[in-house]
Image 1: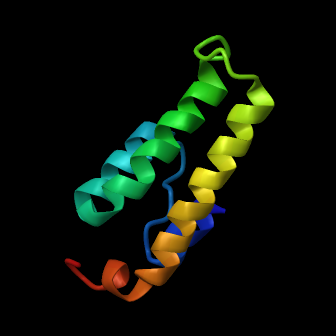
Image 2: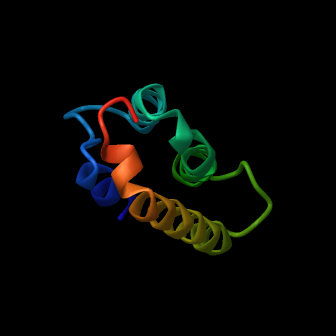
Length: 88
């Protein structure tokens, strides 16, 4: 869902681009997206790669990630015009 929202504003993932590189590229081009994307990236990486990183059960961490992604997606959609603008 988040990748579709980003692609909709001209920030599609590149083939073979990992999540860290993808977010780094986006934030370089659109610094205003750092705040909504940083927590989503951290939660995704912890859930995907660090199964033992948290004492919270995986399903609870998945729900938290879903909420964070929903918030980031909403932010992107509301800011669509500013984010899509060249240099904006």
